[in-house]
Picture 1: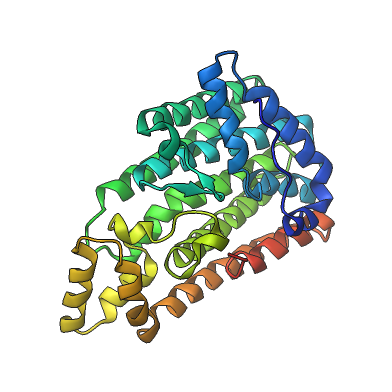
Picture 2: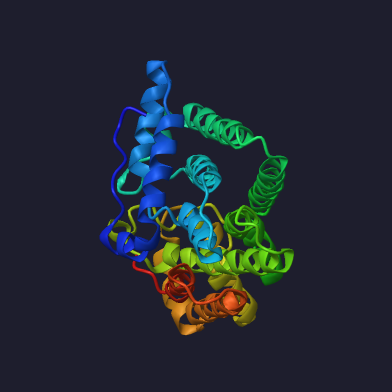
Length: 331
């Protein structure tokens, strides 16, 4: 990649201090595997340097390995793989949501169009699968393949349910479990498996990653409703504009009197981009935002309990901090 990747934000860098050297090695692997001799392709890949966030998923994998007592070269490769997969989903999501901003910069689709974005996302997936195959270990390919299959099914499921205004809470949770929590669970599973942890501990750490991912996605859906674009660094309100129902809106629809529910439906189906401003007062009044935040807190607490399988260590401490911060993270 011709552009230099930007450093982690100070708070993330401080939190991930126990794995700073490991993350640096992951960056090296990413740069080595995200370039092209073809100028047009390299230009698109270089733009991804601006998409760098907290590196949560690579950090989860590495912290799990560190908490298990063993960080190996395979962990660095696998951490790069999951980051490629995550970035591919972001590129595709921006197309689906017609988003124009990601990480405070224009999205790939807003600069080069949907066709280039789709092909770039596909390229990231294939680079990720090829990189995982270089380990020569069928376990990595199987775990990553299973999780990526479920992730993509979750995205298709959500796409098929756009505009369905009677979406249930259970179906919403099923969707986010597949499209978001599956990959965070995969990160922790890979970290544990390649640290030679017993099957029971692998299961607990996988459950931690899944619960953390659920909490993260609910919090992210809240951010889409109440956040500020200048702070979030991405387009907000896209869920409502695309008629993707998230937990706060589902709660409002299910608890509102019939007449109010009809008004909410009218807002959701109306043309224009003022849905967020129209719904926020009702979401506050109905306690729907607090309800969703409570659900996210419950998943975060569940994640914390799963860490009881680990002895005290700097890695475990950071995993605990992530669970405590994920719901109330900075915008």
